[in-house]
Image 1 (tube, rainbow, N blue to C red):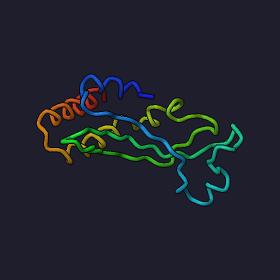
Image 2 (tube, rainbow, N blue to C red):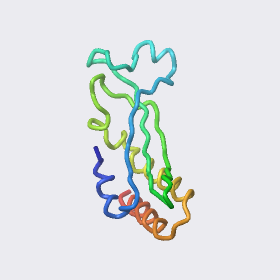
Image 3 (tube, one colour):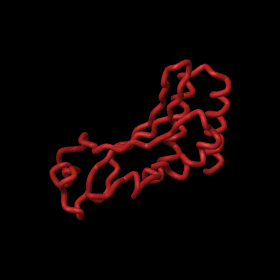
Length: 128
């Protein structure tokens, strides 16, 4: 599921796919973990810890090039799907998307793609 920002960027930067991936964050402090196990069999009133990744990918010369940014420790109610309940990653989506795009930009040498990515970054900054 694409967030509103990702949908907007698709028209500005059509050669790059931007997505958010979520998985359970198991790298949390043991004192927190014992109270909030973070797995799918929990009571819906309990909390789960998630890790999000914003990934920007493009195909350059037949090779997939990717830039990413990660955020751990995003807490959601058990049974919620963070890609639905928290698509803006608790307000960090824009900055994480810029970081992922900058990471991708550093790994490519394609003037047209560079222009698209730069336009996407400029667009995100204009929203702030």
